[in-house]
Length: 139
Image (cartoon, rainbow, N blue to C red):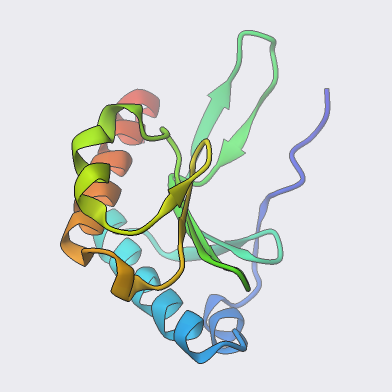
């Protein structure tokens, strides 16, 4: 069985965030870091070279594949600030409609800049996502 490539490690989250080249992206990443820290009550941890994760859970698929991943997290990439909303968006349609300018992938929320969205709605999305994950995975 293949092992997950993305794992937590001891690299410094503050050093990683400080090194984000784009000033707006760095500022937005610092804001999201504080928001997720407050919502989850968890310490930020580097997962792989570019992702900041909060908390963790253990999953096991019917196929037998299992592993660990963060409850929520983000990555300040060059093109977008990416937030990881692990349960996806199906149960959050009402929140997503109020969020503002964004794009989504399966569990990725792509935001150009925080000024494009409603931060109160983002907070609600993260809170409900984390609560859903904790309910499902018991963390």
